[in-house]
Length: 88
Image (tube, rainbow, N blue to C red; front, side):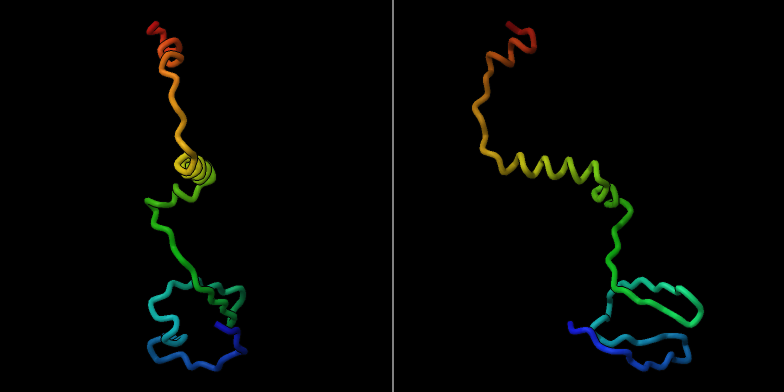
C-alpha cells in the first residue's frame, strides 16, 4: 500500500470513523499524544496464553529445538551411555 497524504473524514453521530474497507476487521492501536491528535497504527495482538512464546528464554529454546530438528542424526554410543549411567 502506498503512503498517502492527509484525508478529511467526518466522525459520525455515533462517534465512529471509517478508515475504509481495506482496514475492515483489522486491529489498530489508537494513541492520543495530545488533545485533538490521534495516531492510528495497525497492530496484531498476542493471546495471553501464547505470550510466553515471545519471551527471550522461550524463543531461544524454540530456536535450539528447530536447529536440532534440522541436524542429521548421529549414531548413539550405547556402551558410553551405560558406563555413564553406571550400568556396566
